Length: 235
Image 1 (cartoon, rainbow, N blue to C red):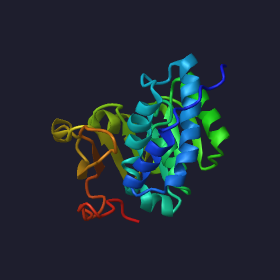
Image 2: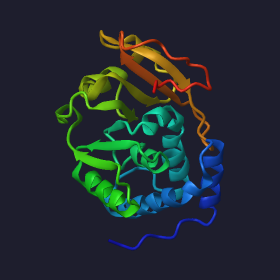
Image 3: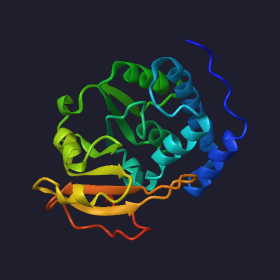
């Protein structure tokens, strides 16, 4: 495989600024850029993502993935487990694993070339709490093992639950990354599931709507405080 092209010189400053805006340590730019460089390198051969410009990757991949980070804080603090469904090249799972030590991340992806890339990324970055599951979501046989599942640009809320709802613990939640508030998808949720909260997300450098929709089993516990400063995931 060809050696990676050097990243543009202003990229680190842009990422550091975005991390600060998300209340994350700007020093995390170093491992995140290591991941980005590896992704750009593999992408030239294996076509892992349609986004090829490194500056776009910072905004549309790294910062977009990390906009939800505070909503997994409680899970990470107790060493809980998150399954990233249909993760592709590891988004949002790998950026979250980088910035949230202790969060046990399983990257579920059926495409072999993407699974191989992610294994190499985890090895290169030394992410011991993350692993790759090369599997179709519905065939992934770890029922009731996860505090949360997440998906980014994967499918509708009902389909995500149909494919991966079996992975959740009784009190577990789906953290679905969406663009505009998905009112139609929420109205079509299957029986036994309800929306706990829908949080607007601000992605530094991205002028587009983003929401994090939190879905839980009906009767899975009291509604959390859903004010902007609240963590919707109970510890």
